[in-house]
Length: 503
Image 1 (tube, helix red, strand yellow):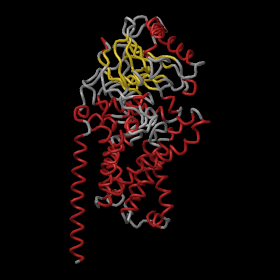
Image 2 (image 1 turned 90 degrees about the horizontal axis):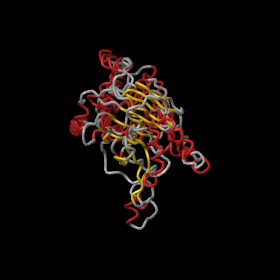
Image 3 (image 1 turned 45 degrees about the vertical axis):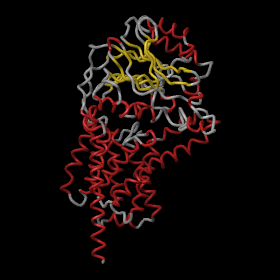
Image 4 (image 1 turned 180 degrees about the vertical axis):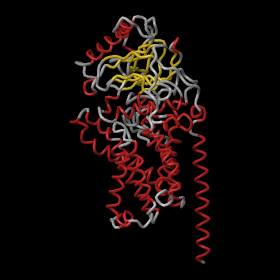
């Protein structure tokens, strides 16, 4: 850090004040995420955090600054995490602030580790960019992963976001962090400003709007708009079901496919004969994909089922990437075997996981890869499909996420999955936002949040398979591992040289 007036002012602050400012920088960066969508601010907030890192004089201080930066970032970006606890405020409302604080600090530890490692390896700002990209990749995989609100998601609107088709969201993170590092380094060496200016321009320059067409199969998205507090209330379940039935039967023009959101059917598949008959009558020969729960013995599954043109259930997919503590208790089955009962999914406590990604045969429309709610967050799950589908199909209930940031961030991540794979994505959401997304991540049609009704839209065409769809995260993981190995070797060599000179 140069001995400029801002640097002197920063060094005059106490440690606690510096950490508070780091949290403010992180909060500023989070305003790049939906629904704020102020992409420029993620560059500003991170640049301030990188600038403060360059003033760190110990690995411990660097780590604490990283934790503070991450805590501020995640506290703002993940503010929606309190919403599930507010569905039943009397019982669970007290947990909301603890959930936000614990999640924000827990995820911030990944950033703290990156700051610590970059300092220890003496790798400078570029090393911090690489370490932070590695930390974000680990966040997507460790303990089943939770990659929500990755910094790269702010790029989905601009030309820079299209690079995800080549390098995926983690490669985009690396480019974003390197551009931030370059911007900070340019304060001392203006010649380094070229890359960050170029990348920032690509990030802020929006891609053209999609060209609307009437050619292609038409998909109808049904949005019953059931608030979570009322969704399973016996007095309201028939109301929401009839809304879905009316939307299914609406209009003289029949679509080629009808899609209901996650758990839109209010009874389990095992006992839904009359319910399915009503759905088949409303569909009038059009295939329907719908979200429903089903039992297999004591096990409960969150499923997507296909009703064919004859009104028969022809295919079923069981969600396999479940939400820890939301849909199941981690290690519940294992705990049951050692005498700690009441948490085992196999005994009906929470949901059981399906066997893995699978395709649904939708006849003339081709095969679709179903993604139930949370599953769209994981690019590695999308790539794990047994074959390339014709399109991605997300069924979700975003009523859990409130009506401010959560639903829009979920939609943002779905758009990134479309860019990465070069596939269109169809998204049916209980309370919204239901949308059709083309293979470049652009929304071609959508039904607004907290709106009941249906949306008919043409299914966009896919693009050729992308490099990221073929190779995934492995190339970037190898690059990150190689960099860390070289930086570690360089740091150890420097330590040896210092000790020899000291001797």
